[in-house]
Length: 375
Ligand SMILES: Nc1ncnc2c1ncn2[C@@H]1O[C@H](COP(=O)(O)OP(=O)(O)O)[C@@H](O)[C@H]1O
Ligand SMILES: N[C@@H](CCC(=O)OP(=O)(O)O)C(=O)O
Image (cartoon, rainbow, N blue to C red; front, side, top):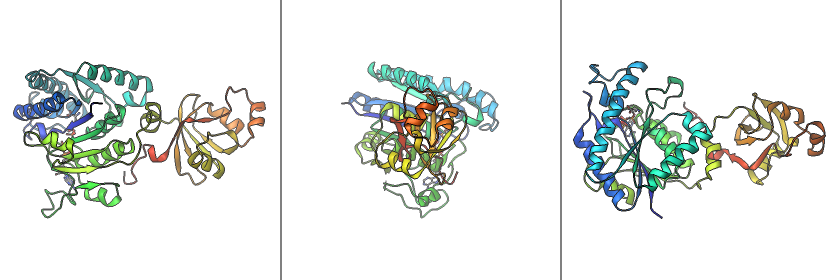
């Protein structure tokens, strides 16, 4: 089967501090993508650069800071960005397709499935989907802001074989090389440690946004989804191919986790939990080590007002997150049967299935999106 890869290009690689697109750079990246595409790879591009490309055209002297100004700049810049990619890719006979996404497009299962279907069709028709955040509608509280996490979610959504985060630095260093001249490059990361998070700093230029910190966060999301990640720079012809072949200028993050089924992936990473169910030690053992479903008997407490079919978090007696699952009960029903045997529970309320969470709709916390401790 063809390799499926997601490439993310940051604003710092496409634009300059003065704003506007660097057309030569766009052409360079387009050629690299087209060459991989021609060799049979399925390629998806997550690209930043809309705000940086558009602000000068609108008359701002520097990248704006206010949300509505950034959104206005993105509205102008996104069109310029797509036009530049269209032209650069068309030169190599490749069709470019624009996809703009926001966070709810992942957390709402129906929307996520729609986006996946569209992407699958585009790949089947041999187009390159070009994805960015839908900046003009994304409100502050749910905004990705940087595109690193967006690219990791896309990589998980399409079950990519690899995520390639391209930036202006050739990998993760022991400190920001712009500030720590003797910082050394880390070639390979198998586990994300607190120490690595401490080494990673913010953006390196006035057009970049997330810096190495958000790239580590993206690596964490992708690794949990079973997708290996490369963070680095491509500057010469053939560098992207080298990165895909494992000899790129950058840092490789490996993943030992299995990729999840589409449904479990959605439960673990993308869904928006509507409540919490606390369980006792017996249920914890059954869920984590014995592959069992959650029954009423093991439930000790309920939080939130959820409905059947929604996702809830499961915590143990100490409040530690154990995982997430789809509840078959409403919150009031769980409260009514908490701690009861299955027989008693069925007498107490009218329910179709005795499992509160079925094991096929349960994902343990090793595979669950969890806010990083430092955030
Ligand atoms: N430990 C580190 N190793 C490498 N780069 C780092 C580190 N900490 C911070 N950085 C900065 O992260 C920058 C890349 O992120 P960013 O500016 O957001 O780029 P992009 O627009 O490509 O996402 C680099 O230019 C570098 O200055
Ligand atoms: N969606 C925004 C992304 C902003 C941004 O700077 O992201 P990045 O370069 O990935 O740190 C844009 O296109 O301008």
